[in-house]
Amino acid sequence: MTNNTPFHDPGMVVDIAGDLDIRSLAVIMIGFNTVARNYTKQWYQRRVRGCVIGHEVADDSSLDELKAVNDSLIGADVENQQEIDNKLRSAEISESMRLSVSVAVHKTSAKLNNISTLEALKALAKKDAYSVPVPIVTLLNGGKQSGGKNNLASLCICADLKKSFSEGLDVLERIYMKVEDLLKKKFPNNCPSIGANGGLSYSCDKVELMFELVKEAATELELTSEEDFYFILDCSASDFHTEVAPGQGSAKKGQSTSRHRYDWVEGQVKPSEDFCDYLENLVETENIVTLIDPLHHEDEEGLARLREKLASCHILNRGSANIMKMQSTLTGTIATLQAAQGFKVLEAATHEEGETLLADLALVSGCEMMLLGGLRGCRRALYNQINIRLQQNYKMQPALQDWGFPEKTAEEE
Image (cartoon, rainbow, N blue to C red; front, top):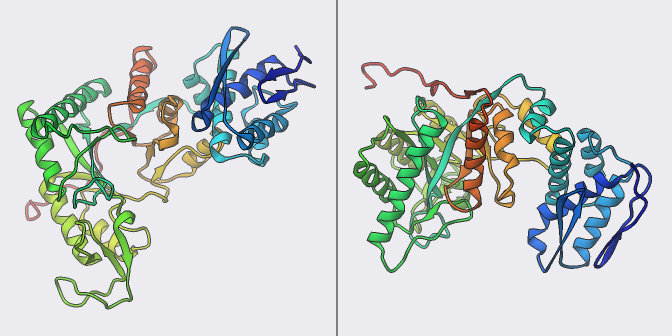
């Protein structure tokens, strides 16, 4: 059915013409609703065939983007995701707008075909089965913005691999709530705030205090590391990385040959060799199974050293094929996921808050782990979405059966 009646909206007119029917109007407007949270000034609602759609208006630049979306999709088949995404890639719009509309197309197409967005993603990705990545829950946030001297970004946890998703999430939530309770008791005049990633903000002078707090919470809950949960440290080392001419400064064992310097403790700038020593000791002491962004991506010698020394720890870097986020279109995201090799993590970006399709994407991504954030705010909705899918009796297998680490010899133990 073609509707040639223009849709009037304050500040602009969206023309419905050619093969663009009432369904495509819903797609465009849902896309506006998804992306335009950053442009909020006014909120308008319409109903198209019973589907609530929205549009947030701010300034002329955002209106220009909305018009560009409309112009690029005129005549497009709403049920052809690849065609829509190709048109969006050529449109002069922001990356967030492009992804937003791409996701909206997918949701509308699934609704038109009376299937779930998860089933539609499985078909789009040409997957035969679903798999559940291990959830990494962000527990405590530190970093440069925390106020303390600790510059390491976040301490995360994941459940023991033998536990089901629901059982593991229950353990992680109990720890999260107990840590939050301890912070309130220890700092009654400075209650922890919730970061954009859903983690609890904790200002401290060294990351070891974060580990101690989590272990204290676990002890009160009668839970233990390596049996019920594991630690994952997100260093975000680029935030406290600098470069010097090779040979400047000194490491513990003679002169440093690295140009890379790190002040993981504020005000104490040290060579890459020292930071590697520190991380190696921390991994062994705290039984950390994954380090995220432990060093700057150009510190190739340091990364090679960590991978050699820490055989029982995954070393992952953002910007590589290991850690992936949603791309500017849905089909582009799926293509990137399918091309990636080795151990993979799907990460939720800040601008994707509240977009539960990411949870569905995780189940067809082929990733071993997913870094969705903490258990508060918009991030919680992602975990809830996966639980909903499990309750809907979709057949799913765990994406990670074991850590894949080499067994330690008697001498190493």
